[in-house]
Image 1: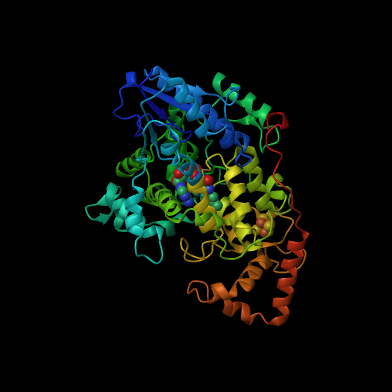
Image 2: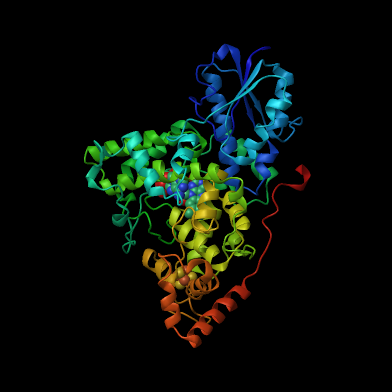
Length: 522
Ligand SMILES: Cc1cc2nc3c(=O)[nH]c(=O)nc-3n(C[C@H](O)[C@H](O)[C@H](O)COP(=O)(O)OP(=O)(O)OC[C@H]3O[C@@H](n4cnc5c(N)ncnc54)[C@H](O)[C@@H]3O)c2cc1C
Ligand code: SF4
């Protein structure tokens, strides 16, 4: 249709009320969805992540077409596919000769940099609208951050509570407290068993995508055989219904708990659906608030859940755009070690790490504390180069998008920004993991041993980390007193501790990421 408006919709913009679709006459528009090699290969994505994105895009295209939109869908297998968004928009201009392009800002810096060139490159006007699926606009976050030395999530979160009215009694927080984090740190009780999380049997569209992914990306992590993530709006709603019915109540208390072989516990497992745009995070918050108001869910769980969504999720997005592109290269602790090979395979005697990597390989998922206090903590203590860690997290998790992954990995887990996001590094010895999990009992290492070949590696690594970063961390009021403990240990024990840590680090082996796509398609 010559003279229409071309509306590109990216893989994480699968929302019928997206800003560039609103107020547009269906008869006057062509929606463009593009599967491109650049997006499927910029890191070696887990197979579940690839299936999730491509299947959800294909389902969304069908939903739009059924709703009367004209949809132009470019598949990865299209022989003329140029492999990039810019190349595909250029080809679409030839097919449709639109009078204008109407896009929504992408979530990632890399894609935004490419989109910013469209206005000069293409003959028709290009409008890039703000992505208003967030509570705070980027300008609002910038205003909030202006002039603040440290950007603490808690204060931003309170602003978001006030703005949305969620869990507010007038000007005061419901229950008299903004934050129930202290109630939400229960270790798992023996025999703790969480309800099963729904999985969705692949339909014909998903099966086609699974075959495509196995054919083109045979060496990537995981297997499509057990794919069960929600790929449609209806499935995402069903997943949310199950969370509210079965798991929200104990979400709070067990938010930080870890149980061997139970990968989901009481977590919502909704991040993939939220990040793709299949489900609205604010709707989820309102549903959780309703359950609290009806007396069907405790305030500590509801507040904890809402804090993740309008607190952390909104905050890391604002933080990302405020600090990019420098954030991607931040390395305040000068960490240079490559990623150990077992991060790709799970083959390690460290039972906690083996379980977290196993969950990751199986399902492209690990829950927050596994990511932060096992994987992230290990990478921090072992001094692994943030760029390698970022790339791994971006590749292996089905919910990983640069804007949410990077601040979580770089600033939260690795302290690579030197303390802009976190007031102190999330560094912990084996005692923390022992307290919050059932991992240590059957581990080949002894969590109570501090040094020697049988000692839990987290124990000497913790002190090795503190010792080698003393200059940077000693002045931190939240860390400083730890050095008094270190100093009291005496030279002999200190030397033994450092030698144990170094022996462990020297035993690590390293490997490159798995091969990626089939050579025939490179
Ligand atoms: C090192 C590290 C890397 C991470 N990488 C990602 C990532 O790539 N993509 C991603 O979506 N989340 C990431 N997170 C945040 C969090 O771990 C996941 O959102 C969560 O595990 C997803 O599972 P869930 O839906 O069951 O979450 P729940 O525990 O049920 O939490 C509810 C929702 O809150 C949001 N949320 C919770 N914590 C965070 C957070 N720290 N930042 C942003 N949103 C949050 C998510 O949308 C999540 O679905 C990362 C955290 C860490 C520590
Ligand atoms: S003993 Fe150490 S390595 Fe083993 S599971 Fe516990 S924390 Fe992990």
